[in-house]
Length: 284
Image: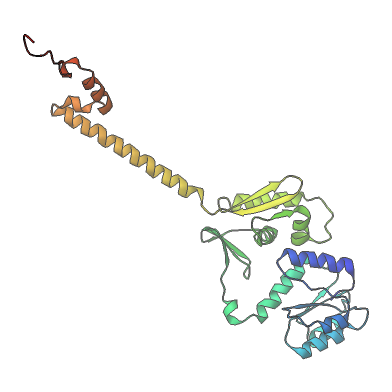
């Protein structure tokens, strides 16, 4: 629930990018009249037709749906009142989309059933795991030392592997929705992830647009090992052939060491091996 269209549209785009489905209403009465199922409510207190605190109280009376208040009222009194009448969290304006997403996930973790809470880290390919609850990344089972923003960048890009993310989307989600400076810092952090997680992921730069993360499903070292084994097997086979040929030569079967096709060609062209034409019976 948000009556400020630019704020609501920016937040809606961010939520959609993170995979959430969004229903947007601009008034308290529309919110209370909404009958569809929903997993969480983002509530602005400064609504045009009623006080958001009254809407929060009414929603809480209906059930246990999680409620996060988003408001320009940043006084301690307002935050305390909002939490006491039923809100699960309180975010003051201005805010970053990344912060709101993090708070949504934190609230959803608290209300999830225990069976869902026991889910393990997210796995990307055979080598990389990202534990979003503990904010830890492991490569081949060993924890990777990532700076805070490197982790945030990786967590964002792995939300949708293979998707092309613009520089503006990344800066808004990982750094700040109101970032207006140069984006060179993004290139520095991308280079660090490429170096630290080489072989597990690739981050492709799309000129003039942004970046695309791909998960490496078949690590290169495995291919090299197979190729080496095949070469070794071929070498062993060749060694066996030479050894057998040498043994035949020693036993006096030198003719067996030649090429089979060459031997056949020479044998076929030997005039002594061609039967003489029938000359007929004498005197006939």
